[in-house]
Length: 361
Length: 271
Image (cartoon, rainbow over all chains, first blue to last red):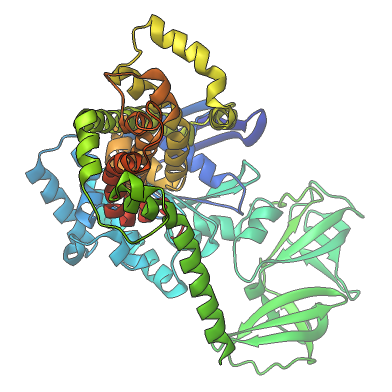
């Protein structure tokens, strides 16, 4: 059992608040990812859980026990740092066994634990080397090994893959997912990379300016973002946003104008809007299809043929929308394009940026 | 000739000239130490060398007593200064307070005060506490004189250690003392080592306090040299012999450790 609970947790530096009352429950054996733009407070939040930053307000509960004032090593956590933070003067084996040495674990037991961790991480051949003599990926594995050896209740990862090159990052991402299954441990993972968040997480916490924007399963957040920020942060290419106004709203849906003069009816509950209100129409690139009768009419401005798919940036009456089309589409720059939105592919956001619930939701 | 070669040649000549000028007094002292008193006053290099000066100097003063005092004071003050400076620098580098920067500057500013300005109070304190003419007294005063530089050096070496390494140590359960002994000291050993060498050299060469606060018992080699300069007028050859005997140990020590010294002083500069 290893749960982590945050209750109205706050952080202030000299009176300036950077974390504003975060409430969150991380379940046993869950892979929880904190994601957000730089400066959103995700790393600070992780370091507060780790005990490296003081908590200035609220409570941190680990396995139901208040841990605000417990020293980092007594919280039963292990952390993997972005820079790896290996001890440069120690061998790989000594790096991994350092915590056990400090805890006065007998040498034989210590060596057994280090060997077991090295086996999981395929580091057996490097135990006598110094970190200097390892590649970036190997160093990263040593940092993870140092955490595994301690058999912590919760693993904390602070942007562990951001110092690796793109190919290695994909490989390590897969290894981390495998590791989570193998170790069956609670993990909290901080990243600014939404692909890592989508692929690794059981649940994602989207943070912005020290506040939680939304918590949920990856696809839940992708398909039903609560607001413009979450909708725009998750997904690549970014969700298309078209600023427009309500033309009519009734029980069958909300009709909004489109650039170029057409209008479209969205199956959203009309409760919060009236005719004339400013709203934002959000559509993901893969929900746009070429359709001669489509309501979005314009010209292809930029076309990116990626092989498996085509990204077409279409200028519609001055607004740019990007459509993800099948790879065989031979569209070229300057072509006239008519796009339609797939059923259920559009989300309306009210003037405050909050998503409006769909009909029947 | 190729201008690059000319430049190189000119630089070489310049470097050797500067080195020659700096080394000249030491070389002259060495040469004079082997002359007779009559030869010593003529700037000639043609003379018959003699060991007489060394014999006379050794008969008149107990060289080994002075030398032992120098060794004890230099090593004693260095060990004491490091024992004080390492924890101080650790605290300042990793747990800085509101006044840390000011304290560092204030410590350095004590080096700007002319020592003679506090001679009378220091003398009185030493007299009243019975520290006058004791090795302990000189160890204390050399420690105090060298402490600002040693704290500054240790501080800058500690500052170069990435904070995440210590945080990883904290997560692994290392208390401050364990962080210091298992992580910081091994990582900064080259720097600390050269700091120690520098402190030994500075203490060995310290003359002002050593001369004023010691007499027959605790006097180190700087006082040994000085004792040959006054009483019966100047005897250049004997003074040179005494000086040679005083500086030889530290010169040899410095020469043997110069690699470590340079490595330590540039430690952290190239990553």
